Image (cartoon, rainbow, N blue to C red; front, side, top):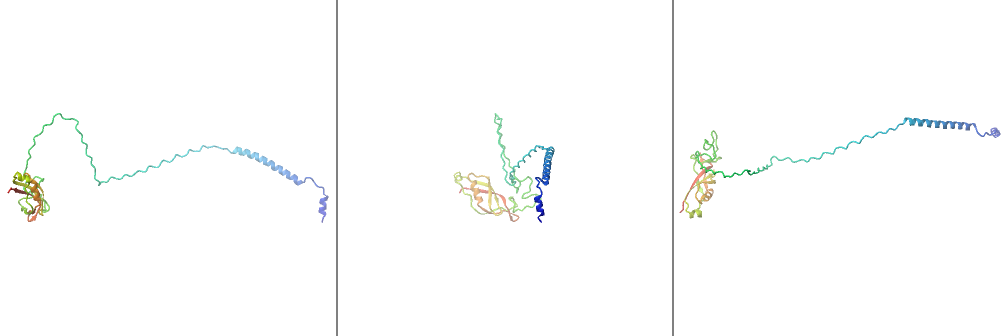
Length: 234
């Protein structure tokens, strides 16, 4: 039982064993391989790796500025009244040395129209209407003619003498043309034959009067009627 122990004590002790020698050899081989691998690897790395510096591309241009917002102008109104500028008056550059001779005034002429015609009408017109047309006499102002009945005085003042007409003892007939409506009212008077200082008094009196209207075919019509007012001092 104790033979193995006794044998180990009797055996001579070695300073270095075979395991230590083997480890030293392995360590030396590993160290040599490491040195060789480092040297060969560094050469290959220095040989294969090449650093190339490339110039970076230029930066892109800045984007264009956004377009300015256009202000919307209101459209001019077509129904608005248009303003018309008066043309400038240019003075003549050449002044005549002599005054042009004055022409003698031409005497006016008066042509008596057809009875029943309208002032401003065309020559050859038909009294009271147009050829081939139908005229409603109650809605058209007509010139008084012999086909109609005369307006009849109903109410209203008589002309009053003015102080100046009394001082100068004015007497005579004043002829005034007025519009007598289908209702018998009088307006739009104008003097055809004047009496000094009495024209205004005659017109004011007539336009305050009421008449029975003129009739045509039994129907009242609006007519231009001539009044003849005779004035006499008492």
